[in-house]
Every structure is written in C-alpha cells, then in structure tokens.
Image (tube, rainbow, N blue to C red; front, side, top):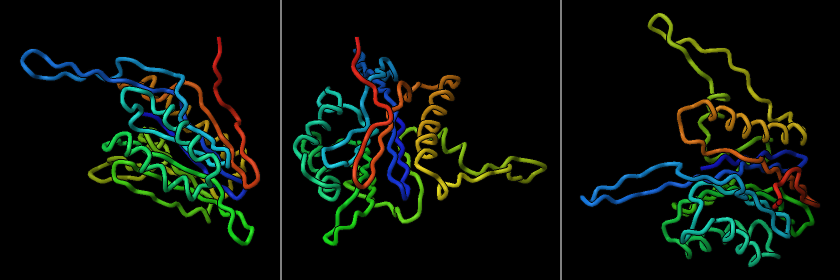
Length: 236
C-alpha cells in the first residue's frame, strides 16, 4: 500500500507520497490449498506522484502493478499520451486507460491542478478517482483542507477524537484541531511531510507489514507553474 496526501490552499496545491511498494506471494500447495505471504519483498524507489506538462499532479495508491509490471511506467505512458490536456480531461481519461489494461484494477488516484476558464480565470480542481468502482469524486476546494488515501489508520488516530472507558462510561480525551484553513504553503509542505513520516516511524514499532516507507516526494502546483520540493533521483 502507500500513503498519499494532497493539501489545497489559496496559494496552491501540495501533493506528497512515500516511496515504498510491498509485494505478496501466493503459493498453491499440492492439496489445492493456497498460502499468501504478505510483504515478502519491498522497494523504496517507487514513484507515486507525477506531474504532467500542463501542471496536473497525479498521485496513486492501491494496486501497484499491472501485468506483473510496476504501475509507474503505465502512469508515465498515460501522461505522454495526454501531454497537452488539462485537469478536466485528465480526470476523465484515467479510468478508461487503466480499465483497458486491467478490467478489475483496484487503484486510487488523487488528481490536482488548475483549469483555465473561458473568462481567463484559474479554478483550483482536485479529484479522488477510484478505478474499481469507476468513481470520480470532486472535492470542494473553496475552503482550505486536505485529503489522504492509502494506509490512513495511523494519521486517522492522530487527528480523530478519541474516547476512553472510565467507570462504565466514555470520557473524551483532549482533542486539538488542525487549522488547515490558516495554513500557508510552507505549513502545508511541513504537514504533508509530517503525515507520511509519522506513519513510517509508527509502523516501525508495530507488528505489521511496513507498507509505507522510503523518501517523501513533495510536489507544489500553483496557477502559473508547478515544481518539486523534493523528488528522489536515480543514483549510483
């Protein structure tokens, strides 16, 4: 799995992702029974956030391979076929492209960018796309906020109100909201990195498959340009 996150602000969009892909192995025994081993192999060099020529960001989580090949190569091919398309075209073409490759693909995408209206105004757009159910879910970006997908349980526990049992009743623990509506662009960058790194660090001590890990890639999208804050590179 993965953890991907997008924050949408008046200043722009911040998209981030981890770099780990974990692989499972299924073995069929002579008696016909099957055994599935989880996390038998992993890679920390997986790209999960991408940028098109027209400044559209695409992040992915979920099913990470198609026909036994990493999904990253297929996303890059999709981008090459839609080099001159804006976000409104990109979000409509993702599901058909990947369904053609695998009719049962179960991959999630977050797609963000800006649409230039006929009146010359840039409109901020953000979508969550689910290939298995053919859903394209628009997000209301009029108020600053954030969306994340993938291995969200750790981040959810940090941000969700918690009640503890006490004398046959439940008492709420102190809960402090995260003021996304007051975030600057730098705050959003810091939070995106924190959300993924906190998940990585917490998983380290849990009895579970370490499905989030590696470097954190962070992309910034503004109406007039898009650029990387951090992005892993090939190396010796």
